[in-house]
Image (cartoon, rainbow, N blue to C red):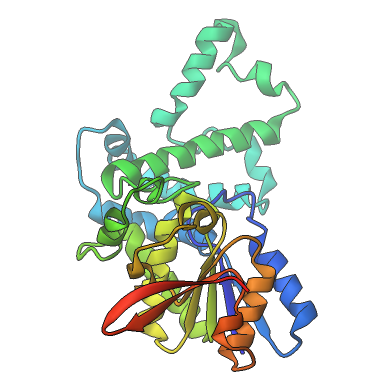
Length: 317
């Protein structure tokens, strides 16, 4: 059996969420016959967006408007295009020497207004206002800060010109946070007009399906900001691998879906597990392989079809 564990977009990019690593280690100790793979589609999504090819796609689709970020992007597009891949490489630790010449490379958009605020606070004799923060020896840290402002500018362009739901640490958060109904989330997932960000995520998901051909896909959704990504990826997996079984777990189901009543969730996922995921997932894999009856699953929601109607069953043996 092949299992793919994913953390959908978006979570903190520089702090990988540990759930899939813990689950993989646990399953390796208990199931030597299981092939377990991990994927980080959030990081892949950002790397594709913030590349020369990605920004060319952004420029082709951007809705020109009066937003300062969008105007800055259009007017400085060639400089931004030249800077984006060196900046990403530097932030990944691949070219630390760029720190010495980074400031001259970066077009300064709305996010750099922070520097002017620092200058007002520290006075005109403090250069750009960052000397007090980084000093003469903080060249690398200062460059990382400026590179982050550059990426913040680009994120603002995408949010104001392409997809209002996009942020670095969350995607479509308002669709899932404390909603009384699933309607807003499902309406967005099933939209006939996906954004560029949606389409890139769909491409990544299709590639993961083709590369790993998983029998089971496990989605960990710790926060409302990666629930939309989970539903969107599940929809693509359903289309690409209709025989695969899809499992949803993590902090969001633990809090928001503890009293699940809407069976439409199971149009996307076959099972939803609650609380710590190790034992429920192990039991679920045994069930999928035919070694455990469904009645002996652990802290798991399933859908039951009775008399042409759906109902949700909670199994907690």
